[in-house]
Image (cartoon, rainbow, N blue to C red; front, side, top):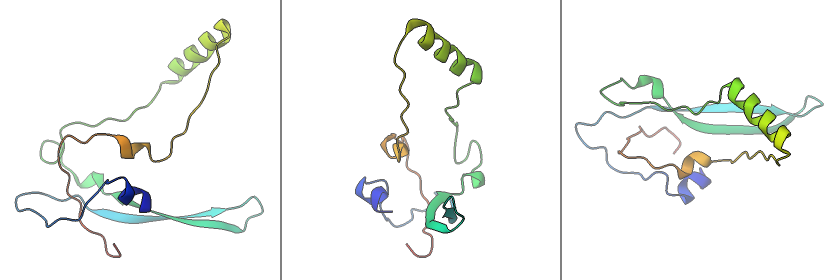
Length: 111
C-alpha cells in the first residue's frame, strides 16, 4: 500500500452519482521456505474485474502474452548472432501505465 500511495496511484474521493464502482478484495498468500516453515505472509488488494460488463464499464482488454514460437525465434536469433540477452522483472510496473479514463473502486474495509 505504501508503494501505491507514494506513486499517486489512487486517491480517496466521494463517489459520484451515475458511475458504477469496481469491487475489490484482499488476497492473502503464505510463502514457505525450502524447509517448509512459514517464511513470510503477503497480502495484496485486487480489483474484481470480473464484475465489469463489456460496453458499460469497459470497452477493451489487453494482456501482453508472448507466443512460445516468438520466444524461440528470439532466442535462436540471439544465439546465431552472438547477441547478449537480458531478462528484466520489474516489480510494480503497472504503476507506470497511463489510464485514459477514471475508474472508481469501492473502498475495502481496513483501508
